[in-house]
Length: 375
Image (tube, helix red, strand yellow):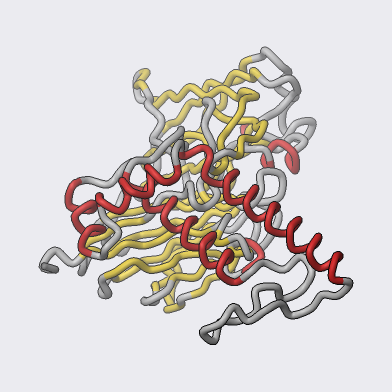
């Protein structure tokens, strides 16, 4: 999903608009080359510095370079601060360019359905494919309907749901409906509640959607590998009665994953992640879902959010936070009152999941709050 004209105009007002995006595109060439270029440059620099240090027989401090600048060589294998700054800036420029015109495929889009009587019917398959996690880095993945995360399945509380699933993987699998109160034989755990779904086989799940809220679906067979490689998706159940639920203007889902594909947010690593956008004064609902093996304390700069639901259930006493630790299997719903215009960093605060000497990566994005009245 790209920016519309007003969003591009907003970026231009911040000095990183269409003109600079065009310049970045020219400088970078194909978007798929950008990360590889930075990594190659970094490796070349490290090799040159290591050779220089070895030749001098000491880690040394290097020369000042004049004009009060810091030493160029800090220690063996360390990155020159100028090169570090360049790589950090390049990553942000790549993010802005991609946000304006996203390249590649993105998952998590709503899945189409058809009605058969009073039953809402969805079709899913699981395939082995390749997925670009960030520019120039493609991984072998397992994916529902060929995308990561899998398509969003969205229903209303109390609706009858049927999911017709075909396994096109080279191994058996099954689907668990995480957070749903399903009949025992629909729970998706092989050899506990059902037989495995072997390669080439089709299996049908059917249940009544309950409870409402933010839930997930994922493999429950060889799960560390299968979920780690991409068999995951959001299962959203809208409440039948919305009167007791907080109101909001727009919503986003953040599916967190780690380990086998690296640190990913909705199947992508920064700078390939997409921003969240809102207008000044809007309320934004964010649904956090952790499908990984690690905790991810998600932190928003510039403004707090109100935590309103846990695992789909409304909290009797919502509370304010700006950092929320999302453990594996957790779902949290938070409401952001977008009262501060600008670009605000939004990331996992386990810093090794988000930033390195080469720049930001992994579980990082930006919340853009646009002031419509800004000149």
